[in-house]
Length: 612
Ligand code: GTP
Ligand code: SPV
Ligand code: MN
Image (cartoon, rainbow, N blue to C red; front, side):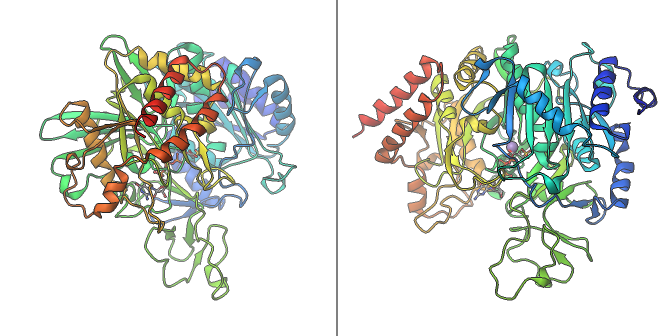
């Protein structure tokens, strides 16, 4: 029997609820020893991982890892939210009774960590002192060292976060067991994996992966699924798959804060890390607060919506990250940052890394280069169809402090007041560059009807057009109707309402090319939105919101085809009317959708009809 008490004593962890929880899972999984982790252990754990070959060096102070080849993204099918109340079943949360799922997971996990170390990772998903701190503490147990290294970059990790808990029993129990990855039947009818959030017990049970959000349980399992449920159950807050950024206007001295949801791999990281376009750089500076999760609440004192980023790092898509698209990210993952790359291409001789879009062409000299599966590029047959060197969902993991445009106040526990909430996704037609919405139910309605092309961040869905309400489809924890009502209630409590907007950087021409250059230029529509909120521009009212007049956009330093610009600022009424029928079907799936949302839908539909 392993000695939990002395491991806890040695680490100075003296919470008896945590001890009981760890003892239970250590015995069930059959782990050989336990080790309590603190962020200060990072150097040693990195050394051990290098010695064990779990990490490879990628230059000075950077690391490379490969995942198992069938373990490269989230599996939406195998992800479940379980509770004891059947009324918690929604359309997207894959609800199952916890009485069914818990025994299933225990059965899978029993003995599955035999011979391994169980790492105990106490963490906090909030800046310390935040008003939502009570929802932020967790203890992950995991049997994989590289998962610990990712957790240290992505969450605040240390025993102090648990010792100092006001309610010693109020922490999320997050159990991660990797399993025998080569024998789990991933993607087959015999799939053994389960990723379960037992939301009403604040317990997370993930079995069968060591990749990304499947394994780093602070991130989407706690920070999104559990937190969105907690926010609803407590009536206190929203937890959303949102980026969070600030814009300083040096001319006026004003600062704006914008948060918003785009589905996975649709541009949140790139937007929040954005460097202002050169022509606007003297006047505006963008600050990074977060790129994947925001928790939102209203401060009754000043009646404003506030947001924090509960995370401590970024798990960013590597593809197309380069000096032109995202110079900030390039700095954030430079040598010396402690960055861990997963599933990019790796050169074992030079310790270099590469991914599609890192440079326009792959390295000409392929000596030493291996693709993400570990196969030598030089072994590829001449003239064969080239599969990518890096997996499309390959990623980098770096802490927030490495991001050069990190906001000076990013650790402020109070969070930042929100001026705008935006939604967007990959949509090849119909959706203009930006349309602003000034009415709360219509803004919530717009989020609920976010439709976009699915991406490689989830297994097997790439390119499929689907609705992804507020970019929360894979992370939804309770029924959609209640979710809409909770949004109306939380944001409705704000005296000073944020403006809403829908954005689209991905409209394409008939030839398939993007009509808008995107990336750094995305600041321009956001500046227009802030000017609209300030009453400095009026835009043009359309049935689906306010669209910029062309001369209101600050386009200096850009060369944009006039036809392309006209297209992305126009509303195709017949195409929108078609869309409204799909929306009606989509919304009808949701039980108890508030009447305000239906009223917003009818208002938009009527406005479209009166244009023809
Ligand atoms: P998750 O971490 O999966 O939640 O994704 P994310 O929303 O943070 O996506 P991210 O910013 O990492 O972008 C995903 C992909 O979209 C990357 O390959 C980017 O290069 C690409 N991308 C981001 N912004 C733009 C843009 O404005 N235009 C175009 N064309 N591509 C973009
Ligand atoms: C996403 O898929 O939206 C991510 C990556 O942010 S993961 O943490 O793997 O979910
Ligand atoms: Mn995400």
